[in-house]
Amino acid sequence: MRLNLKDIFLLFIFFLLQVIWFNHVQILHVFTPIVFIYPLLRLPLQKNEIFNLMWAFVYGVTLDIVNNTGGVFAATAVMVTYLRKMYFLFLKNRSFDLENFKIERFTGLQRYVYYFSFIFFSQILIYLLDSWHFSLLWHKIGLILVNTILSLVFFILFDIIFYRTSKA
Amino acid sequence: MFKLLRILISNKNFLFFIFLEIVSFVLIIKSHDYAQTKTHDWQTAVAGFFDRQIYAINSHFYLKKYNDSLLKQNAQLIQALLQKKYNDKTPVLPGQFKVKPAYVLTNQYTFDHNTLIINKGRKDSIIPEMGVVTNNGVIGVIQKTSGHFSRVISVLNKSSKINVALKNTNYSGFLAWTGEDPNYFEVIDMPVNANLKRGDTLVTGGMSNYFPRGLLVGKIIDFKTVPGRKSYVIQMKTFADMTNLGPVYVLKNNYKAELDSLKLKQ
Image (tube, rainbow over all chains, first blue to last red; front, side):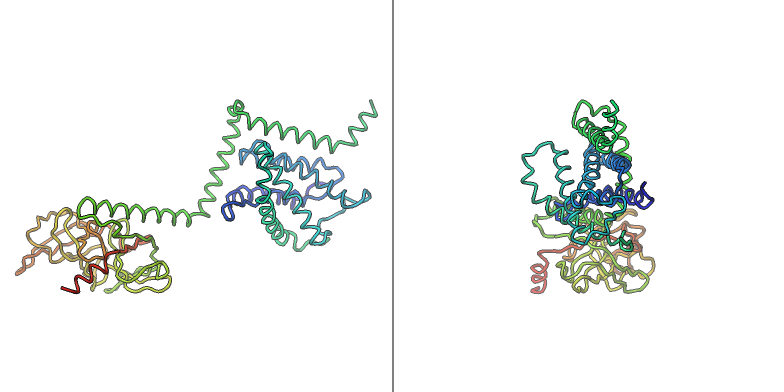
């Protein structure tokens, strides 16, 4: 299964959203929501993940070029895309039919936990890859947690906007 | 060999993932390496291009914010300028005038008694009898305030009389609108001893307590003496375009009540 036009459109839209708006939003002067992983988390699951990984890499590198961040976004996007499949395999058993699974089949809580885990993970990864030291991570955890919750609120809004009419 | 190939093929997703991560890490390491930054000219050029576009888009979104910030800065500069004028020309009155930025919401200029509405009111500490100016000159005096808005008696009002002076002299008269062109005024009661020339600048006289002395008002177009009176009637063109007003500044005279109480005692 290849990406359909809607997935590519979403990647493009979220690239613009992150770059033009969210990178410049500072809620309470501290929090900057991370929304660029939303379309990656909504990519259709595939047995052959090479296409998804490739799209994620291109998407991440484009964000890196605009943000002048080397490969931080590329590494994060690829990592999220790969671990996403592991996440599903961990939740379900090996006979789980990945190709036909849609995220809409998740209950609300399952979906929010899924989003929350990856937003939280990607923020830690971005912080580590960007700063290259662990020593201040514990001081940042609180901020990252609040930022994750803020980003999650946006993810819920995006679900309503982009997938309200979709059926499992 | 075949077995190895089979293992590689069966793990192609994982291997491709590792490959992409390695490429990403190489990019990260390169971007952290100062020596490598010179080779990234193309990347900087692309980032610069995007930054320019993003700035162009963002500047539209944030136009109001930038505008407000510039207005505040301007207000602070006007305040500093007023303070400097006082230091230079008259006895020092530290912090006599406080400047607050505002926007003109409606501007009348077609009637005999015109008023303006601005977007600041009692909640912004605006009270009646405060002067209103732009960068280019005097606009009027606050007449009435509500919570969020204020009505200003425009200088384009036949009942408005604002004290003006010939720049760098103490000769003064009163600004009066004739009710014709919104950018042309008469100055009455200017003493004939004043050595006038066409093109001379008129500034606020500072006797009304609404405006400090020395704010720009307009320039002399023509003048004539009044028969039987020892004064000039001056035709004057304002520096401010009274038909095109946007941002304005409200002047609060912190000593006005004190000065007014002395006038009442007279």
